[in-house]
Structures are given as C-alpha cells and as structure tokens.
Amino acid sequence: MAINKQPVARKCRSFDISPATMGYGNKKSTRNPGGTRRKKVSQYGAQLKEKQKVKFVYGVLEKQFEKYYSKATNMKGITGDNMLQLLEQRLDNVVYRLGLGKTRRAARQIVVHGHIRVNGQKVDIPSYSVKVGDVITLRQKSAESELFKGLREGTSVVTPKWLTFDAPNLTGKVVALPAREDVDFEPQMSMIVEFYSR
Image 1 (tube, rainbow, N blue to C red):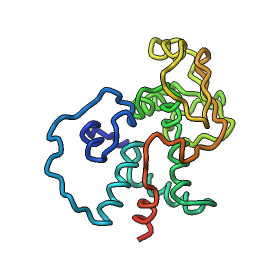
Image 2 (image 1 turned 60 degrees about the vertical axis):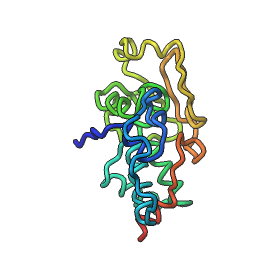
Image 3 (image 1 turned 90 degrees about the vertical axis):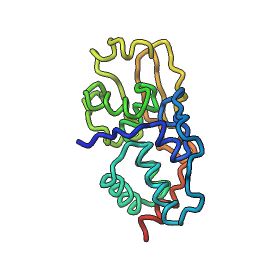
Image 4 (image 1 turned 180 degrees about the vertical axis):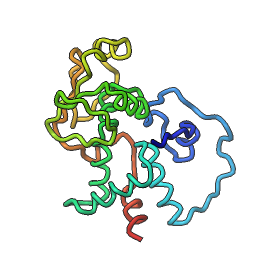
C-alpha cells in the first residue's frame, strides 16, 4: 500500500489552499514566502495542478483517481460534480467530516485499523463508498478508548448537512448525498474533466 509522506504545509502553500482544509488548523509554512514562482502557467499546467490538488486533499493516488473519473462519466449529471460526490462519499472522508479523525490521514488510519463499523459491520477499506441511510459507528472497545472519549462532550467540527452526528453515542448517519456546496474547499472540477478528456 502506497503511503503519502509529502509535507502538508508546503503542499498546501503550493496549491494555494488553507491547511485547515486538511485538518491542520494551526499549521503554517513560512519557508520561502512568495518564492520564485513562475507567473505564467499554461492551460495544461493549470489543469494538472488542479488535479494534483484534489488528489492531495482526498489522499487518492493516480490510478484510483482515474477510476473515479471513469465512474463519474458513466453517471447521470455533470461529470465534475459526480466525481466530487464520489470522493466525498469515501469512508475515510466521512470519518474525517464527522470529526472522528482530526485529519483525513488520521481518519484513513482509524478505518484501516478496524475501529469503524458501517451498519454494524466492520469496514477497514478507506475507499468504501457510503450510501444514504448508512450508519457509521465505532467498535465498542474503540468507543471506550481515550482517543475518542473527548468526542462525547461534543466536537468543534462543523458537520456538513448531508451527515448527522450523535456525539454522546459517537454515531454518524448519511442522510443525503453530498452536494458541491458541502465541500470544504473550492475545487475547479471542470479543469480536471478537461484534463482527462484531452
């Protein structure tokens, strides 16, 4: 399994996104501010950068990202919005959005280590796609651990409207499909669609 070890703050600065999008509220990078960046970027370069940005935010590698694009093109509706919906429905992203993981990387590890149950069944695949009506809970033993104990008093994470979170029981539910306005950053999905449709 490939592991992304890229420095978060530096990558956030290169993609012009806030580290808070990645779950790092206080992380900053002061190294080489402004730098010696090229001012003019080709259309291809801009499309490539946008694709890399979305891949970086969701922690998805190239092959899997291409599969999401292929699946999105076969769905009804706008391909870019469909692709964003598929990425938002990933279990590791849902765990992060519920506040069970402080970052998407931490949420991915929580899933892989078997802490998560979907409709009562153990799911340890981060790319598992949740559906409307799915209930996300923690394993009984995990719910009692110190890692999740603080969440029972409530979390400062703003849950998107397509999810609900019951803090005392540490239970989340998918109540609708994610919409574009529910995404916590501004991706230019049309540029990614253009990149793949060349």
